[in-house]
Length: 369
Ligand SMILES: [Zn+2]
Image 1 (cartoon, rainbow, N blue to C red):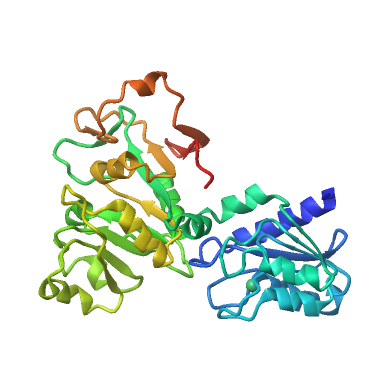
Image 2: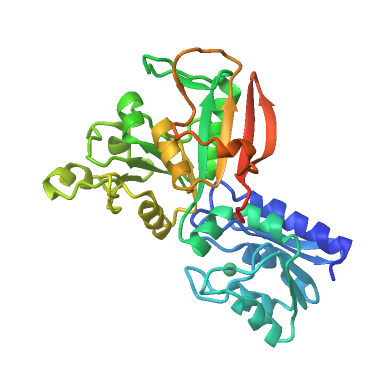
């Protein structure tokens, strides 16, 4: 059904889509190539929410050359009026005679309607070329739409002997500069970065991207059941990106000092029987706020809670060659001897050396995201 030229054109469209990885949130990353055979006459990608979609950039570049051409898009063209007019109609008007999409748009406002619209106007449409690559690029967006929760990535750093902190819990860097720079890239790709109040009280972090210029800073989220966040902390006083405080506190007098900052939002997830923030309900709230890709940069207890509730999709582990001794381990979960003989739940999907440290990415086996 698809030729080698088709595959190579879609690969180009996927490469273009990936250029939007730091900026399209909450929108998906989408690329578009318009070609006659292997001759590309227009190309583009979606840069930022509210700005033109990939197809519009590509069609503008192609102009008259779109007549009789094939459009390759990494996601089904939209068919609804959002902040911009529908791309399916723009493609119809352009004179392209064939549209190839890598995957259907799961957004219920589109979901097949874009392709049907084109098909019914006599344009040849095909779907599913390099679909798994396209899904990978938008796993956060897809998770938000299909599961109503973000794709959750746990970021962890350990010493060679598996320790995360010295026994006095003093704050320090386990990993080297290259690994820390890599974390900045992961933050920039994420819709939001989540941490626990313990980390905020210990380190007063900014949780932003500092090592390079980015069009969009990730939203910062702090889990703070009892509202202990100091009103003079970076997350409250610096308004360069939104801060969400997830809390069980309902007393408006206590919430007021935070609410008066325009960039601060209070989220009220439900409470577990044990008096903690219900992570499932929190993730639903985050999906409703447009958070698709979520990075958890938290201490052992909170990271373990995500694992215990089966809410983590990916683990990014940075391992330093230092031997620390003492201290606490990476996760604190009840002993599970059955895991020794059972099929592993996690699969390493990539591993690389960054300076002196090793980065390994693990994905959940049964996970389509
Ligand atoms: Zn569109």
